[in-house]
Image (tube, rainbow, N blue to C red; front, side, top):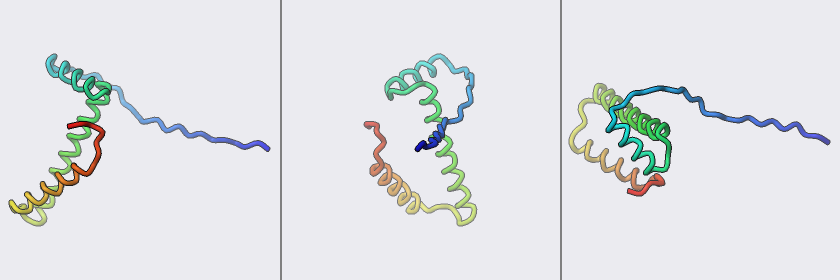
Amino acid sequence: MSYHLSYHLVVAQRQKRSISLPSGLADAIDVAATAEGTTVSAWIAETAAHRLRLDAGRQGVAEWERQHGTLTPDEIADGLARARAMLRRQPTGKSA
């Protein structure tokens, strides 16, 4: 009896980019990536993804405010407290 095995390799799509950075910034990125035990490419990708998530969140809040009015100081404080509590509950694998 023979079995046909099918393997589907999932490979992340990547696009190669060439960028220019000020020397001091490039050096700081090298240090940060090394400290996190990752590559410069991975560090930049993670940092860019984080920035895009922040921007999307800001856009979401702005859209909500256009529809419902400006958030009150109490609503902002409540949202910050909830976000901080969520961040404390999520293990990141990094030490603070």
